[in-house]
Length: 88
Image 1 (tube, rainbow, N blue to C red):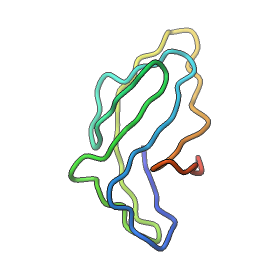
Image 2 (image 1 turned 90 degrees about the vertical axis):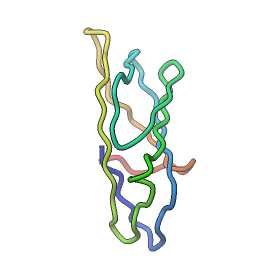
Image 3 (image 1 turned 120 degrees about the horizontal axis):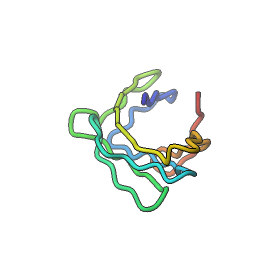
Image 4 (image 1 turned 120 degrees about the vertical axis):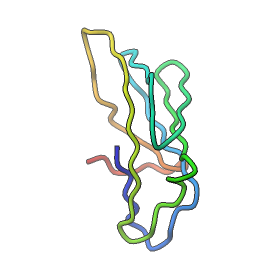
């Protein structure tokens, strides 16, 4: 997953939140630290991904998640540090 900062101010420390609709769970992650309650996921920066530079700076993290083998709907909304962000 890639987080791109479109603002003129760097982000120093971040958390990205979303909700899975179909019981998906994260089992492994790199570039961040995850916590999950039900479908609600929060990924917080790792030490080496803490700063997202201004004006197009970005960080990446990846993960492996399981699903129920029936439905695997993509999340439709994300928040970064509590603010809604564009998906795409």
